[in-house]
Each structure stands twice: as C-alpha cells, then as structure tokens.
Length: 313
Image (tube, rainbow, N blue to C red; front, side, top):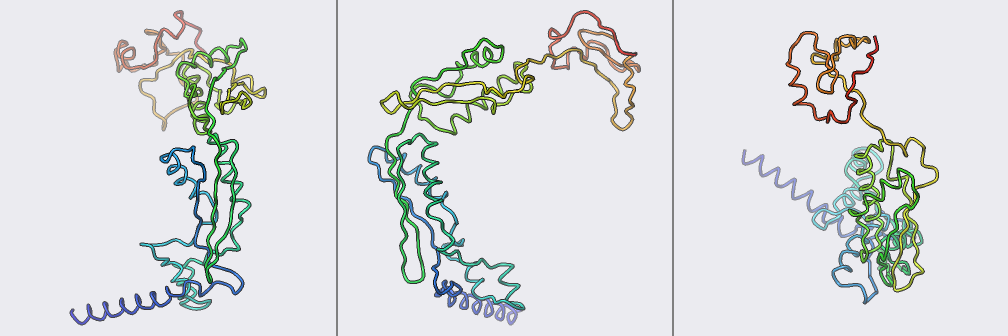
C-alpha cells in the first residue's frame, strides 16, 4: 500500500511540474502575428457619479465585453495549460479536446462592438450623454483591452403619464398607478421599466384581461425638459389585438367528484349535473355532501349566475 501511494504521489508531482513548466509559456500555441488576450478593464471617468454607484456599475460593466479571456482555476489558466500540453493526434488530441481550452486571441476582440455594447447599457441606465473610449495594451505576447467611460449626468424621472383614452383597458391600467414603480425622482432604468410592465400585466390578469401582455405597453420618453430629467408617457400599442382589450369572467363551474383521466370519456355526463351553491356538481355516486364543495372551492360563487342555466345533453 505504501509503495502504491508513493507511486501515485510521484506521478502527481510529475504532472504538476509539467503543468508548471507549460504555465511559464501560456503563449505557446498563440500564432506568430497574434497575442494572448488577458481580459478587459473598465474605468469610469465621471466625478459626479457616487463612489458606491461607480463600484456597482464597474462590477456589471466588466462582464459585458466579449470574448471572455481564458478561464482560470485559483488564478491559474489550467485549461489553457492542458491545451498547450496536448497535440493534434492520439492521446494528446483527446486530452486537448476533452479538457483543454484554446487560447483567446486579441484578434478575436472587436473593440467597436464592445464600445457599442457598453454605450447601450449605459443609456439603458439613464446616462444619455455617455462616451466610451477603447484601447489595447500589448506586452510581449499578451494583450489586454481598456475601456474608459465618460458617463455624463444620470437622468431621473420627473413625471409619468398613464394612458389617457377612455377604453376599459386604459381605465384598468390607470387604476394600477398608485402602485407604480416609476416614481418621480427615481433613476431612468430599463430594468425598472420592464418591472413596471410586468407589474401591470400581473394586475390586469387578476382583473380578467386574460390575453393581455406587458409587451403591449409602450413607454415614450421626453428628455428635452431640462435639469437631466425625463417625462414618461405610457401608451397602448396600436397593434394590440382585440382579445387583449377584453375582460374575461368565470361563467359556469362544473365539479366532477370522481373524475379520472385514465377513464375519462368524451361524454362528461353533464346530464347528471346538479346546481348546488353556485356550482354544477356531478356526483352520481353521492360521495360528498353538497356543502363540501362550497367550502373547499376557491371560486367565489358570487361571480356566477344565480339562475340555473340549460345544461347540454
């Protein structure tokens, strides 16, 4: 047993030494006229942005540029080392394809596209006068990217106007306004706007607008009012389908006391339905007392018609 442990430790040390030797040359598989890309740094050059907000922005922005550099384990590019150890045939090819990671190259980096991505993100956060500068730094066979962001002032919400027409849908949307997320003084933020659309969608679903979706809402912005503020105008999109503007109500409710999917038939025995406490109950075996259904059903009988309707035969 001791001999086996000794051999295992010896093999492990040999592998570790081999990886360390290769690690001294992470650029081994980098083409002659290219460089190993080591990642991007973000600098926010705007003194008006609070230090805490700068830190939060930088934390998010650093994950946006593409591509990502080679992954690391405990600060070491292990997969890149394995790739460099491997080869294009035999066991080395299997090792490289299975556990290795090809070097990420500077030629893979599109600075212009990354600048556009960073610019769009900042505008969605309410920085409408943002400017982004990019540059690269090359040291021997390695290179990194630097992005400097001049944020400009952050715009905040002054007022929001909900739909003003007299339709049932517009009235229902206006009734949700007291719970709006888009309050005066709040930062203009795309995520906040998405959250508002979701909030309205949920509330309208509870009011019977079954086919409504938050995607049918349009928020127009007016940034010309000065003082780095915006006015928001909520509109219902003209292409909103007619069914999304209608409220749907619960009509008759049929309760099958002994329903089984495996034995269900096309004929659901509506002829045996009895009107009890606002529900149509099909309980031919008389398994339950009528009062049970009234107690356990979550539907409010007040939403149903009080008179018995004609049951299909």
